[in-house]
Image (cartoon, rainbow, N blue to C red):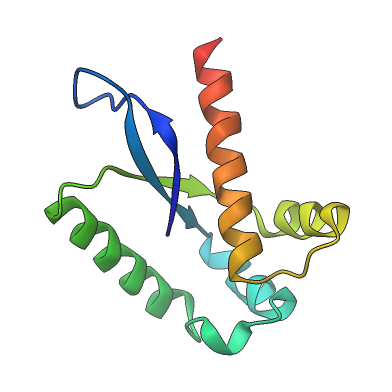
Length: 111
């Protein structure tokens, strides 16, 4: 989970606030994510284990009053982005990519 930039929450009125984004992976792509990640030993072994951990993390954030957004991550798109940026596929790159995707989504929605 990563902190992103300030933006307005649709659930709250008022000024912009810090938003947390969570890279959200697809079950069918989990084996590919493990294959390409240089830090695969730090990831959960199965998608179900990861999803349980990520869901609990989202619930914990919500209880703490933190607005968190799931960001759909296509693993092949992540790999291509990492190649173009000269980065290894690791936790920092996955987090940076999720923030980038959140910003792209926000720009598209603002149009």
